[in-house]
Image (tube, rainbow, N blue to C red; front, side, top):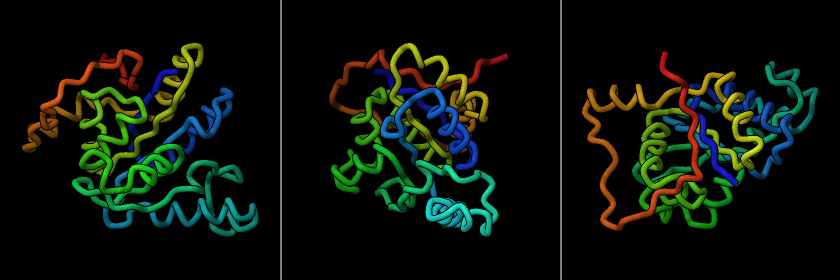
Length: 197
């Protein structure tokens, strides 16, 4: 299994991607989501998702744009992660955070990301993206579905973090902190990167 990661601007993009991933036959328990939630920015969408999971009629009344099958988004929970701030999380990542304990996730989300199979070098970058309000979707796939998962993420607006890192550094971000304990890089991870033109 490989962990494929996409970073999005909105929960709407992540929900559409999740729907496509499930259409590929990827089980829901293989999909995780986490999003920065400063100023409770996802409150309205989460209320619509929960209403949709309760009944189709409630979803229609709330004006939800995603129809009856909300899946992962209906199970989101709000948390506060030290060093990251308020987030919403769902799927396997939420279970992992509950198991580790919110404060025990390696000083933030990094420990949880590593437990999920995200490479040591990439975990701090994804944590910073979430801290800055991004929506991160991670999916465990077999090699036969990896390219299809990447294509689904690209279709729904996954962002290229390489370009954003330069902007973060220009604004004063010093990059990921160095871990004093060597960690073997995991080459089974492929994160979504939008090709440069």
